[in-house]
Image (cartoon, rainbow, N blue to C red):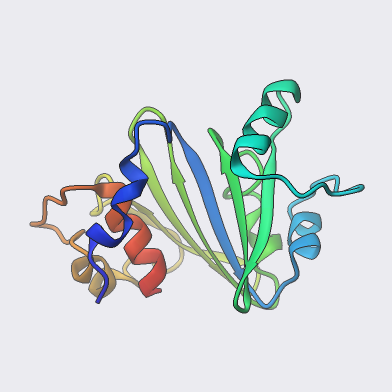
Length: 167
């Protein structure tokens, strides 16, 4: 079992808000195309370079994509414009996708989509708020990472990422 402490770095004050999504068995460029991104020529950017690029991109979302084993990881700073309730069905077509959105205002959301269907949404800041076709699908996993009904996690962000890892 992973503890929230494994992801404590997510509480760094420099991380104002973010979206991190994982899609299984899909190449990074394909994942970006599935969410409607204009891929064109893709530069390789560090997190700092992506932030700098985002500052010059105006209102356009900047999403970084990479691989972690058989999973593609999509990272968007300060927004979830690219991966959200509207784009997750396309991203998960023929596979599964897990996504986390953490807002600057303190709301954290966990999304699970499978084979083109967004099946489960959990507002991890208030984990009893679950939605979707299978709202109770991850109750056991929520309790395991400290997001059960009677839990008060030290870090919701860390516990939410531990939930992603467990799923």
